Length: 291
Image (cartoon, rainbow, N blue to C red):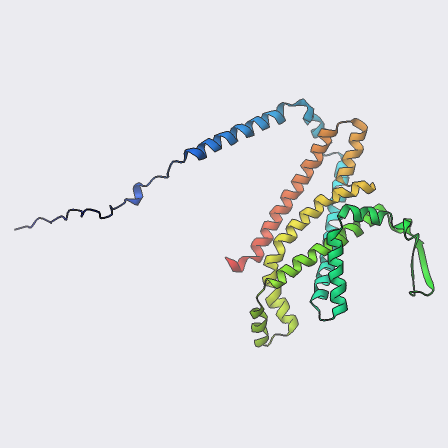
């Protein structure tokens, strides 16, 4: 004889069982409205850009790969690389000086960082380009003593030299701050543990502190690289033939200002996107231990 299973009636007030498999995303009408408005605005902007003849898209296509434009782009990239390499080396030295226990060096490095972070790069470029006003000749010799050799300042400080000096000195101050942030982000217990394992100070810094600090240093350094690239457009004020100056020379002759500025913007966009992708790869490389 079989016995029918007994079912228990749900008690009043008990929570109802929910079938998760039948769950559906909740409809959010405000999101749909916002998405539709955004789509309409983007479509209107794209229509304005494509149909407005004043953008001069045929002119953009004609000058996009012009040899003068490409030479200006090369100059901008060269300036960026030189300023970043020299600025990074000088920035690391400045931070090492600030970490030393020798007070005069600490004060000198601190004053440098404060001064060069405070002065805009455009002012520095103009100042270095006009250095001959203060110093007609650059000389080597004994301080307050005889001079061994000297040169006219205008023959040494060209527009290229002034650009490299101005951008490098400005960049070094920021890189010193970035390196300081990375090193101080590493917990002091890591150094104590390294010393307890018998590491020297150099081994502790290279094998323990630096790899962890790089995770903090790399992202702002990548952003700083992009900032320097865009900052090279300032050298056009000292008549250096970077990308922006090359564009200005052409539109001063043809009066096609907007199309030529679009050419410059397009190249800046291409380079910045490439640098951003490289930065992401570096961040993933130095962030392996965090995943």
